[in-house]
Length: 431
Ligand code: AOF
Ligand code: ZN
Image (tube, rainbow, N blue to C red; front, side):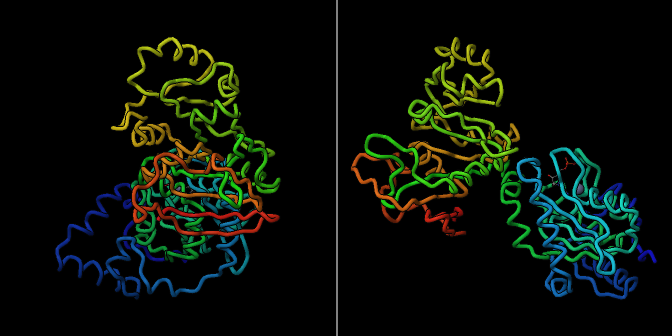
């Protein structure tokens, strides 16, 4: 049986804002009427937050089978490196303890997880009418590159939807849950929320801040050195650790280094993982010193490459900017901050406008300090090798000016700790 629908889903969908704002614009008596009406129709008591699509404790108690949400999470992870700047989303449709269909968001601009799962069920010849759906992210309710998933869910006659994370995208933000509930689909929120949230720290940051999520990665010795006093650094961490780093280049959309690193190492910054994607390369180079013969410039025809330099120097650099352009390197002209360096706040906004949702920061220490000091580093992934280099002049992961008072330390929270064949891997989140 189709569950009774208080409002026609089409009407809600046609003008969700009207329906939504109606909730908020009602006076006290109006509110009471709406909730009594809803409670009467469904034989169940509604709380205001529920109708407006917010979470509530009571609903958390509803039983659901974790196995299916775990499956949806595993499916979502298959999209790593392919969906940015969209979120990783997985979906499983279940009836009578049988999976009827499943899917995930496979590529940017492609079908959303819910529609993939519905299509999969159809392909298998399964009828999803009255089935439960497990989805790691709140179904969308807007038309973007894809039509609203709420529409597909209602059309298919899904009875109940188990949701992991809320979608903070202002175009969705509770509206997806609200639309489903208004159409009398049962929606249980916060199902394995922590695990589902862990899929998308990048998306959550990018969609709310409009700037990239930044991960600073480095490898150092036990005594905190990233190279010997002579400058040798190959290799500090072991092979397995270095393999892990290649997955970061696939996972995150951009990669950033300072010009000193380019001058010292001539890196290519490409992804050497099988089937991996090369990240967009961004070089912070205020004076535009990047050598034309560097790998970054020479390979710019194959991988998107940008140099960020000071707008104040544009005139004197015009010729070089043109030459770089001929090689396929874009120049981002950013004005200086009060210290005369590239204004990182402006650079981050610019990268956000370019739809770059995430950046792997790979050094060097001066840039790392500026980025951490400015609060732009959201996560640190440190590899600590069981070696000692010593040497007063051997570099450390973060240099720059440093803090002036010990109480002003930049603090992070340890999130993950792993032993990788003797290397310590530590992941920290910004506090
Ligand atoms: C879902 N399931 O699998 C994804 C969702 O431009 P579009 O149409 O692809 O919409 C992108 C937005 O849709 C994205 O910012 C996020 O809010 C939501 N993504 N939603 O229900 C999915 N990928
Ligand atoms: Zn969607």
